Image 1 (cartoon, rainbow, N blue to C red):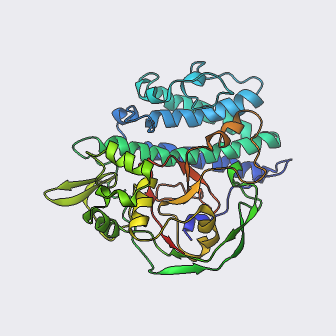
Image 2 (image 1 turned 180 degrees about the vertical axis):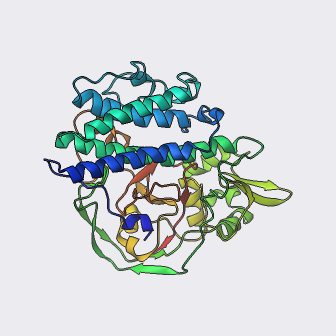
Image 3 (image 1 turned 45 degrees about the vertical axis):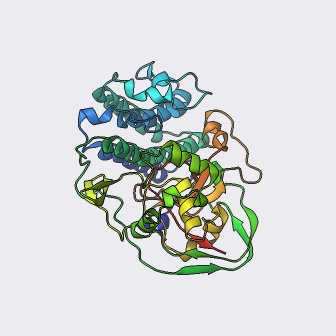
Length: 407
């Protein structure tokens, strides 16, 4: 199991809060908030602003939106005399919370050149100052739970910040370096072969006292037929065989919607995202610049369509999310988000929470596929075997990979 999963999840403390517990949550808050800014430390002012596509937000927006969460969900609600930093920010940096009010159009976040980067950092520090005072007070249990959610929300955006930034930088023809040695795609196989999971009834979903998102709740039983799951992820070399064999030109391996996606993007869909040929050799763009493709490295940045097509070409399939979770103790995971063959849907007895936090997961349970695990871009302490990530099947810009299953 990936080392991050061995760390304790955030604990939901009971009131009254002891001084030590208040100190712990303050420390956790400071660490996570600081990490967002540390991830931005290699950036130039110009790097903070562009939005390369509707799905990729600018770094400045990530910094502001994660701050907006604490101002909107905590300070405005629980601090009677709190004065907002700027009345326009509630509109500018709301993502999708209709309960809160109107917001900017998602694909126009990059045109928000003002407020500038310096002003956004002032906003962060203003909110941090007030949050730290709040976290040292006798605040209610409900607020504590939302703070914990907000910290996990910021960790999600830390990963998105890296993936969005990589996508933006990749479009620059000079292949700029974000940070030397910060590749994130150079992990290698550790173990060969398949692990067998016997048929039977397995329990799926989160249990315990730590933090989880609401879409992990509703622990339930599922019956699984016997299957074998690969102990390691597909490598670049293995996927290159698929390309060389004409995989992108053979409709037989593709879902109909995937085949339409390939043909609609025929000029660029001949390899995974960030792969490019230079002087007849495959290269890959990384956050540490353009590099020759390492055939032994784990495959990265493929869509669900590509993952399913490759599995079909191999005469195998992708695991369901239930198979993945039932087998997760049998292999190392945590270097790539792994596509599953499961649509994103609610667990038994799932209920959408009251208020704005109810918009966090439930309303996205349509037309998306579940990914399991974590990635090399995932923040420390933010992974667990029940975590349910989800994206539309055409997206490649996350650190996604393939694990195969055979029945």
